[in-house]
Amino acid sequence: MIHSNDVHDLELYRRLGGDVALVERLIKRFSTSLPILIVRLTLAIRGQDRLRASTQIKMLKEVASALSAQQIFDDLHQLEGSLATAQDCALPSAIKDVEAIAQAFMAYMQQRFPGIYETA
Image (cartoon, rainbow, N blue to C red; front, top):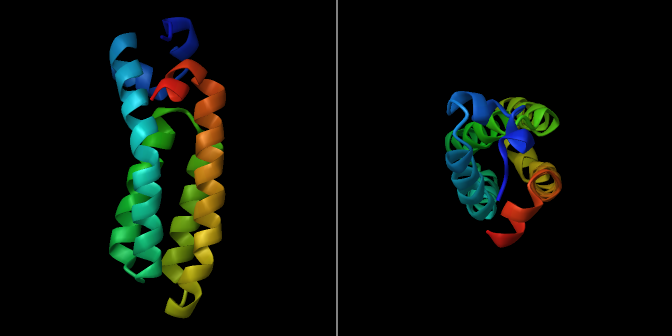
């Protein structure tokens, strides 16, 4: 359980008009879907499907923004730019970047929302 004091600085909290219960539900939902989004992004990169990869990155950027995870947002933005200009043969090397972003995102969630993340 989280309290408004724990989330008052989140963009998500502001977007939802201070509804702490809804913020908590959305954080739980994201914490369970994060691995799925990462797998989808990885598969899109491996399959050299730039459109699908871009879609997954946009979803992850939106969540990073909502959770005020600026560094993760910046890393995703950089990955998005790299994928847009990379040669097809260079796309698989982006998977290391995805793995680093995934680990950073999970660490952020665990540190920022320990009770929610661990019970999700």
